[in-house]
Amino acid sequence: MKFHMISGGPKPVAPFSHAVETDGFVFVTGQMPDTPQTPGVLPEGIVAQTKAVMENLKVVLAGLDLGLEHVVMTRIYLTRFREDYAAMNETYRTYFPPDRLPARTCVGVTGLAYDALIEIDLVCRRP
Image (cartoon, rainbow, N blue to C red):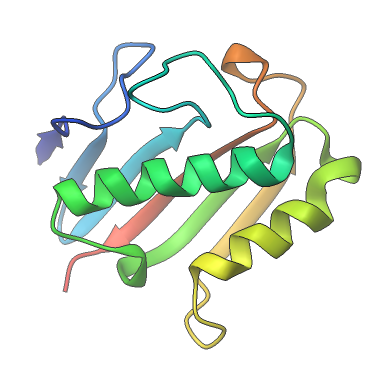
């Protein structure tokens, strides 16, 4: 197994690696909607937070020489599931081509760090 910390990536708020790689799969830690430049500061609204999370995931993947085209599974956590699901979906779908959508789970949760509205983790397959 390889444990990865990405230089310039989002700063972990707890003891974990940005990603762990084993047997050709890469498991990327859930990302929050803050930026490395503004840790703990969140943009307002689900659309802006979804974009921020996806951009953080892209930074981690780029540090591993991977991209969103390598994603096979995502898990999405929403604190306001009913209110934010549709808008999150519209934003999320812009990051993947319609014919290459990864498998996905989306669940409602009671709370996330920094009172974020969303967190996303993912699994990739190395080519």
